[in-house]
Length: 478
Image (tube, rainbow, N blue to C red):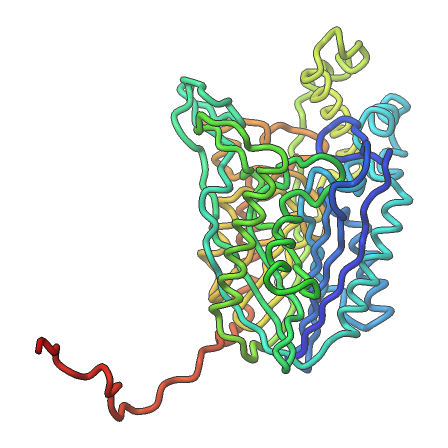
């Protein structure tokens, strides 16, 4: 086994858009911490695979395809063997939502709604990120050395919570509000597992690690930031050293954030919140790195499949009402109704061009570990379903990877007792209700085409000879 790690800075400039919602927002003031691309390359001598984490809300499909092409051209790693996953920080650069030229086919009204009144990617910044993605993977590939690696997982409890609540009216709401007497309980699970791969050279010097955990990047520290992932990196490097590259790949956290709506206490945003999540997850990663046995963890392998999943469509009546509403003043009709009317109009324009979404699912194997990727804000239960169906000792669902198709809820969330923010029909989130189960099934099918490697174990003790002479005695009372 060989392994190599590298990183690049992609901190956006002050004044650039700050994606994270359906309207425009901008970066103001100095950066709190750098946003990065971090890459790990593993090589079993036959197949090289790259796991890439990017501090961004999401990564657009076109950017992924172009970066993969550049990577293959410069170092030969095959496109299907490169996984690019967004951390989902809400304080990163403008890689999404509306893409350059995405609505050029539409009416002047739609163009105005898309380009002037929606959150938009920045073409210049996308080029910066593409260059960084290519450079990070190529350098990680060049830095490959003979290595030993460990695989394991810990549990980070009490830092991530399902943001959807079952209500007395029979529906499900997102962030129903602390102290709300109509809340019956959480509507979905969380996944506290922290998946870890660590790598050292043959002299015992740390190379880096890959960490997988499911939680939104919404702690919201002041300024441009990787959010809590920054504190994850600081925690690991505080023990392992500054040379350790910490590649973070987010788990299935479409309905999971740091906010506990059933807690009576506040303090779930800002610096302290970021520290709490990052240090807790980082400490669990360190426990794995300290306790799991390094060894040869081949083989490496990669599989990918592109699904074609239909989008949901707004009714003619809903579209007609939305067209009327978006031509009125936001202050007159209210920000929220206007915003989702705008999204209905944009979705209609998107459906004219792309009524069916292309959804890449991908499997990257590193010995006994498998990373199963999808391009959605994937509900936590769906990620747990993938883990349950995988034959691997360590299974890491990776959301918002290799593209972005918005929220993909469970079928239940889109049923009669469902509801909530994630189920709103928008240009961002619109797959048919069976989209989630289709992605789950495809990920499990990919995993089952691969044979898990063996988890390294410490050397076994030899045959028993005798116990410790100091200790194998009866009690002495006189």
